[in-house]
Length: 199
Ligand code: FES
Image (tube, rainbow, N blue to C red; front, side):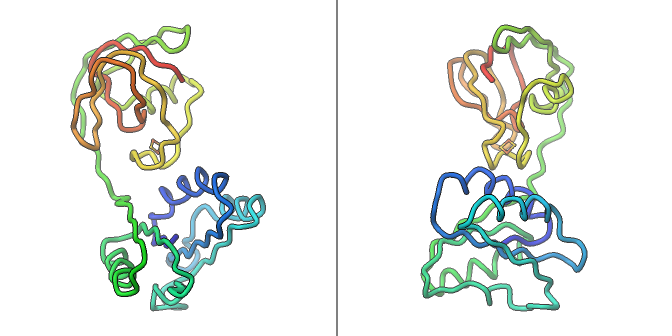
């Protein structure tokens, strides 16, 4: 995993989710400005909890070649999240060495909403009213419902829940769901009808 700057946020959410599901070695190289590395406590906790996980905090001054810690001979899968030029460098390196490469765009800007409609949401056995003017996750957090937030931009699936019925708009894709049962990500879901959910 290679993270640059704020790219650590979705990456941490992915690691949180992923480390318990694998025993393969996972290394994170995280570039930020000196003294600006975030989530270091969380990373240390993950490293203490999972023996197969380690991380390295670097600045560009310490290591100007951001690919210098990738060991192509180990044939790693590379996950990258950071500024566009940062990801391009890593992507080019992966291509040259024929390594699997995946990237996340963390700078996702969700559209501004302007919809004052109100909808009834049935969650398990309780009833709530939500507005069409914000994503469900934020509104549920305000209501202190037992939801989980990870990346907050529709990448990590930590906020996922089952929609039993009703229609939501996925703000990442702009698409409306159908009315039936499906998994939705609360952090990018705008309600557009009454809903029944299972958290
Ligand atoms: S919080 Fe990561 S997908 Fe919703």
